[in-house]
Image 1 (spheres, one colour):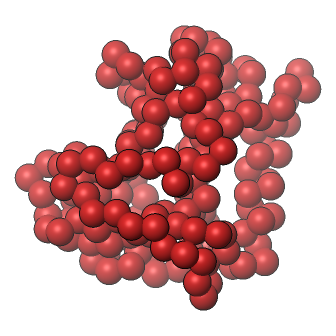
Image 2: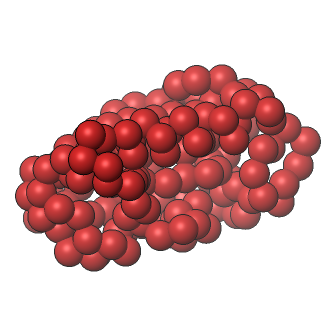
Image 3: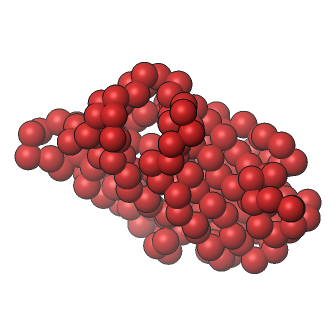
Length: 175
């Protein structure tokens, strides 16, 4: 994860988009989970989530604050999920990115991208601290997926904690 400041945040987002888009074939990166993934993440299972308006040090319009009330028996007992809104072609390069900071409890979350059959395309962990940082994880689509076939899951059940997520996106570029 990379620390970000207000001035650098937009540059980080543009660099991410440029990196995914910079293919020799000239294809542009496209959003796979819709224009405002942060707003679409839905509370699932034991998670308490609330929208946080722009505040001091938050370099985007709104964020989502997610709270795990206690350490859960399973990390997936507290999670946020969203499904893809666009098709993905076999071989597409995928980039999952979001800004995150710990708001209490030490910060620890899992990130998973899986398909409709349950096959994992990406599984990573992030350990945010009290500073906004950009988390970027990459994967490759092993087959073609229709809209709704991919699910992004953020797991928070590792410990009692509160984290704040913003500027979430999943980009794809033809491979």
